[in-house]
Amino acid sequence: MHMFDAKSCKGRSCDLRMPLLDNMKAPLVAELDVSEVNRELKQFIEISINSTYNENIEEMITKHLGLLKSMMLKEYSDEQNRTKRMYDIQIVNMMDSFKARQDNLQKEFKEYLKKEFVDFQESTDEWKNNITQTLLGKSIIEVSLHGKHTEQSSEYIKISFPASNAIDGDLSTFSHTSSQTNPFWILDLGTVYTVKMIEVFARTDCCGNYIHDMDITVGATTNNMTLCTHYNGPASTKEQLVLKCKKLVDGRFVKLSISAKTATMALAEVKVFAFV
Image 1 (cartoon, rainbow, N blue to C red):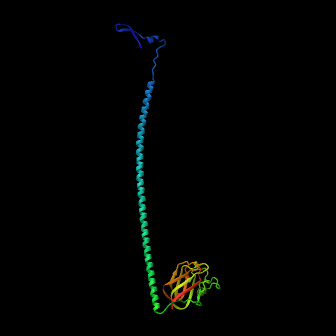
Image 2: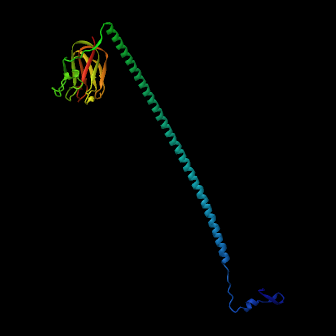
Image 3: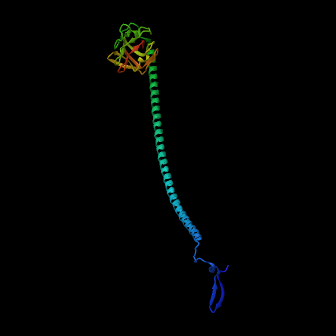
């Protein structure tokens, strides 16, 4: 379609006819189509926004990756230090435990050797004493016969449980003190004997545990006595205790005493064996 048409020209001037404009009855209004401009502007804005967004995202990611890396390195370093401290503590504890066990083993071994030596020495002394007494023509007999004088630190019921019940040969009867501090029972053998061993019988009905922490001493008098042996206990009901002197002891009096703030001594029977 032609927008204009040249009908005639004279010189440099031409008579132009514009059919389209000539046929328009309304005034000429220039209309501008902005849709393409809007589209391009929108596209430009989107590209700018996306570019800026991507740059910001990349910058943010780089920043956070750096922070994350620093945090991970710090946590790793802290964990290494914590693990090292724990390892050092475990090593120290293990070494302390090992040393304590070693010390305990050494202590137990020393105590074992000491006990074995003492037992061996006592056995040797006993063997020597037995040989000596045998060569002298003496034999071991019971010297705590019924009828010898006895006494105890207190009387529970004097008629029923006197001190003499402990040498009457009857296990169903027994001596019995009151509950007191350091109760004791004494036997007078009548003359001096070389005492080797004492047998003590606990009650048969109950209360064997009354016999505990008991010293057995022998002496020429009740004020000058030597330890024969010690019994830790406690004993059990009906138990028979065979208590050998650590070494032979000469004496006329035999004393059984319990070391306790509050205790009761009850003896079903006591037998004293000596060389005669």
